[in-house]
Amino acid sequence: MTTPLRVRFAPSPTGSLHVGGARTALFNWLAARHAKGTFILRMEDTDRERSTPESEAEILRVLQWLGLDWDEGPFRQSDRDDLYRDCIGRLKEAGVVYAAWETAEELDAMRAEARANKQAPVVRGRRDWTAEEIAGFEAEGRTPVWRFAVPLPGETAIEDMIRGTVTFDHAQIEDFVVARSDGTPTYNLAAAVDDMDMGINRVIRGEDHLSNTPKQMLVIRALGAEPPQYAHVPLILGTDKKRLSKRHGAASVEELEADGFLPQPVRNALVLLGWSYDDKTTTFTLEELIEKFDVTRVSKSPAVFDLKKLEVMSGRYLRALDPDQFADDLMGFLESSEYLADKGDSAADLARRSAPLVQRKLSRLNEYDRLAGWMFRPLAFEDDAWAFLAGDVKHAIQSIGGGLGRIEVLDEFTVENIKDALSDQLHVLGMTAREFLEPQRIAITGTTISTGIYESLELIGRDEAVARYRSTLGRLAESWQGGDA
Image 1 (cartoon, rainbow, N blue to C red):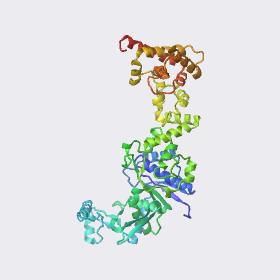
Image 2: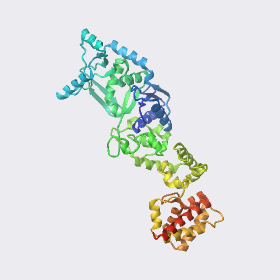
Image 3: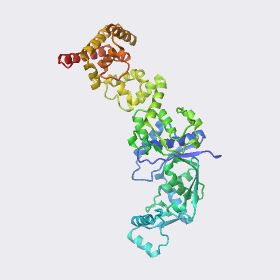
Image 4: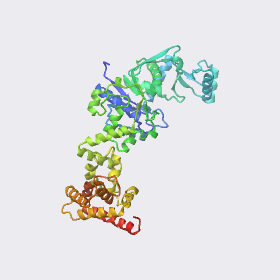
């Protein structure tokens, strides 16, 4: 392409930004940045009843979270009615559209008859209404829609950058509506006019739009312009090979963000939904993606979104982060999710200091509570943790009591000193590491899964550690005396 590339992302602001929509945005953004072209954002809000400012604002926020900036826009179709009316007028003057007066019931009957005759349910409106008939319709208060007269016989061929040549027989395309009875444009009219008016010369979108493409090409050509290049990317499926939905886990980018994924691994996962650079590379910096992305490398086959693979990718990314950057990202997530809101004045400091303890153990940031949430709560025992201690109360008291005796007399309460002291006691008691250290973990955390025991003790400090040890021993003593052992 010799002219500068101009691409667009055109979501409908009627809900959350789906994973598929986010991938489309990313592919368009990468194509524009690779070619040093222009990435345009427009809101296709012809569905006036379902489109909301809240949905638009959330789409803009999520795109920014993903790092996808736009060069022009956001444009809104709801602001462009004058342009659409002008183009509808031009189509009327050219004689390529006609007033269609059929009622919904009449259209249903036409489709049913076609099916009964084993024909495609393709609507062709009547064009030979008499003046008297039209006057009667108008007297009833009926107003027509305007349909594009698909030329017959004929065909429209799409030279798709991913799928090759795709040909549509006009006999299979109904005379589609371009203007509703109130004069407002339909999607196919507005999208075609917008692409033409904004100088879009490449449209990258999901294959579910493939059937719309010949209609939009017909409109653009009828208005005297040439359609853009098209590249229809494959559908996204869940691991069960059915179309991605909420039953597969997070189906929107907002859900992925709320689940503790950072934008970088999400971008990596999205770009690999149909595109690949080679058969082994799965992790790219944004600069590498811009350099390497080529839409012709997108597969025709459906792409599978696997949340578990994203978790693996995310875990690798988190472990590779600079510790300070990881701490910043963790704190940003905890603050945005209001995790620390009711946990006291020192919670933020404690959370930041705990970041090195969890960095190598997380696959996503919302797992933080599973590992470190115990620090912000009074000591309470999970069922499996208490069962571990109660299985041999005498052993638990001996182990925890021995640990308490060592740590409460330390001069300096540091990781090194704590580790040395507990290691000495382990050898004195002749226990294995699990036999001795697991009771210590449960004694201070109430759980069998947590941050490292030595680091955790240092983090909460001597006073809190000793208090938790004694509380656990007290409960064990009550259990012993009650005969639970």
